[in-house]
Length: 253
Ligand code: 13P
Image (cartoon, rainbow, N blue to C red; front, top):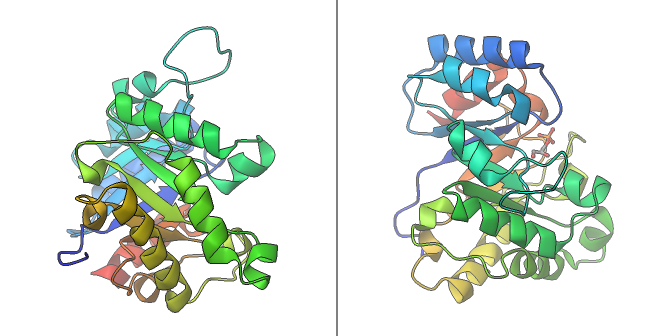
């Protein structure tokens, strides 16, 4: 199923950090310092910063995108940003169903699936996030819980090009805590996720990228991506400093 490993993706989730000016300056520095790499780099910036990030990143080879998207195509949804708007500024990726949106904004699996469908319809690549909390992990129910969440979050999601779908396994207990899953934990879940993908998309499962997220940094990124089913990382805290992003790229070189 994983005969040829898909191209690795290092996705940077800045969360609610960096003003547009700060984001633009960061992107400019990256553009100047971006090393040759086989790894695909994607910056998931606050939506308001995307036009500046787009302008400054130009020519670097790095992709960019957003951290959320509306489930609706257009219309009377005050405050929402549509997938078509993100595509229009040149975004490639969008995170959907991050645990922080599930927890603080009440996003259900149904909403997450609708957002993933909206993203794909507009030509964006959704990064669909799933992962258990500490109680499920401690009860040994982490795999069942995460796979149920995955199936529900992919309801009605279809695509022609399997590289357009990305799944991120982010155990909630490892986000921003410094407590990283082991590479064995990440591989266990990534393999289980790929099993579900094989049920849902028999011809495509090997090409969908499965990322791990949760306290990834230069010191552990290589090890965490070691497993045959782990195709990249979704990085929060360690994505804010350019030096640490360059450190992760160097670790993966
Ligand atoms: P940290 O890397 O800060 O743990 O955040 C992970 C995350 O939530 C990425 O989406």
